[in-house]
Image (cartoon, helix red, strand yellow):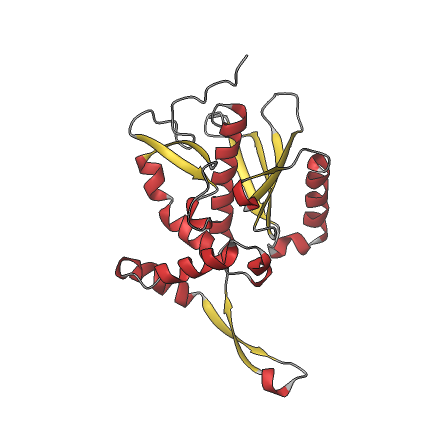
Length: 229
């Protein structure tokens, strides 16, 4: 028996009209030429357009991280993200990014390295929304249906300060233990690596671990509690 055909509806809102294809992860994270084996899922024009700024923010932060620079795709993705800020249509987004940069005093044993360091204050809620959308798309890709209305997809960046708290750290460890021995999947060029595993008997609830450019990690879940619950 062949693989079940993915339902012809937007994997994010369920709309069946004006469908296009959404790349998972976003095509902006790839350098040209684009790979021929990118994961795509059905997405309506409205959802596709609403995601544009979230995609840009995510690419700007994740691809330009110092930890990501060892990945062969990260440098080019980061350069394109900063180049986009120079476009006239990006003026509002550019102001938003510039306003999120603060100066911190940098103290070092080396005199010539002392001074002020520009720090990009991360809006983790935006990163989490991108990861949640990625999780929804991957769920649809593997389950062949979108996340049911009475379920929700949630994702949290492992870099969030709250995970340094003992209770949150222990919760993260418990969630990661669920996927510890799960199969690892990789997107083209290993820009996205992920695992998932069920943790209830409903056939839907699952724990997910995602990593972009090998460093920016998220822990996520599909759990009961959506709009219809």
